[in-house]
Image 1: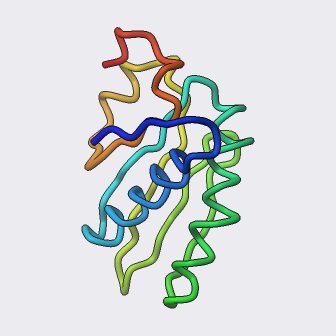
Image 2: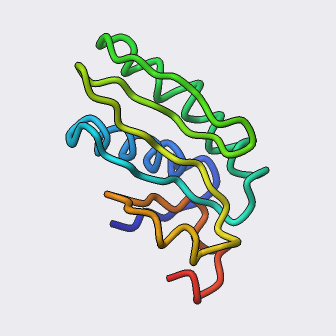
Length: 117
């Protein structure tokens, strides 16, 4: 799935929301949200997740926990199972692609080199 548009069009929200949706639909899932630079990812995309996406799911009783320090990950508790969303930069695509991911969401895909795909 691809989603494009201008600034403020909801691209980051869509990537974050779809990531949570995939994590909930398939408990125990491991996914990743990726952007070229981790600083941009944490300053913008992660902020969208924290401010807009997580609160909506928390209203439904979902539990979220941030872990990982400088290699952030978001754990989502679904019953007795935990799904995990990794937050990674796209600088080392080999390392990222070697992970056993159930899904990957790319924010600001125009920032990435073609070799990433």
